[in-house]
Image 1 (cartoon, rainbow, N blue to C red):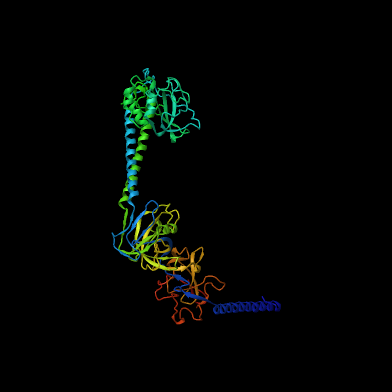
Image 2: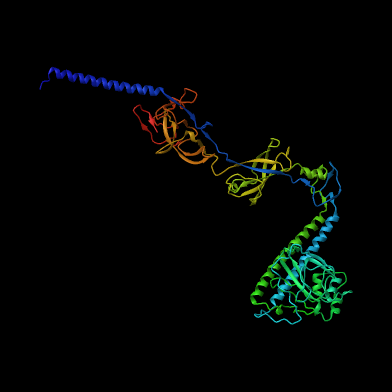
Length: 594
């Protein structure tokens, strides 16, 4: 079939247009490639300090104080008086030489007082133990036993507190006034006494009716004083106060005494304690609330059983309660004895150490007035030996496995602005008390801190008690031989983290990496595979930073790899495995991309 002239022209025109479009596309493509080849991106060697780093360990901080084992400081004592000073400022001394002498008189009196306190505490403990034994020997009884007519039990203490104006007697004599009662057996006098109250012989003779001038029986006016003989109750309250709870009481009734001469002969002349009077009447004080006594006293000198309290008629419940109370009292007495013994040992030690001697060989560097030193809070006598100072700080338990004896530290003083180096000589195996508040050791605030001691290499400018800021280098668990890449050069996509790396063709390639641990708070990452120190990489951001872009070394127009060193393998080194390169992909222009 023949094609007409009009159709032939159309086909020819279409062919020409097609050829022109293809030619234009090819020209455009070659132009783009040409322009692309003209673009370059700067790269840096991996060894550049702005790209990678080496790891020498983390840093932690602490604080501490300066001390000196070759420094002896003596501070004024508020409870000791210096009687003699044996040295002068600038004087050379040896260890053991006397420095000062404290006055022994006060120290000796203190020892005597503490020794008496120990004996008194021992007596109280012995009495409490005997009291417990008597309670344990007592047989419980359900009904209250009938008392012999002559036995006058101590009445139960009144629930009310004596009036505020009631006198508390520390001494009872013929002129003493009770705060209630008429002196009869039915309504005895009641005297409020102190724990150490004493009775005069005249008072006791008046009670027995043996006073030299005896008032008429039953007469008890204020002008005539106490009746004689009389019955009386003697109370002792807590704190020797009329507001205190009743501790104990006992009753004496002189009107029922048949042979008062025998009792009066047992009463010594002078003043008698409550306890000695009770013994003379064959009685002991009665504790309130059914607390047992050694036997209530009657006017005829009757005596209860000295080995038990069977005559008190205590029930089993009462006995159990009393025994429990007495056991607690024994524990309290035992603690009191131990404390008294400890106080005595301290006093003896102070007496034995009344002469303070030098503990080191050195020179008396400071000797000032004790009052001046007290006001300033400084030592008044200082002996200085060799110039060796110790720095005491602390570290967190998190770093115990990383810091060792022999490691170096750096310390800085804000007082003089100087920096010191020191060597750790000791690390404690016990944590510091959380309430010590002396040092902090960095790390987790909830972890324990351990004290360490370091010897300062240079003592210039250091003083005892100086505060220091301490820096410690922590090696950690990361390798010091590895390559650590700055995180700014890392990018990430679905394939993982990668860098834009220069290949042997001097063009950029995407290179995925195998990373390890991070250091310095995540600023750097360890590179385990995919990059070596011989490689060049580009900062991975910017419109021109893409695969295939030509590269030059930063600050130059030179490619990182000389052109004549290129080969078709696309490897940076002759050994393909040297930089962890993967298989390449050939492109239209013959370049190999990775």
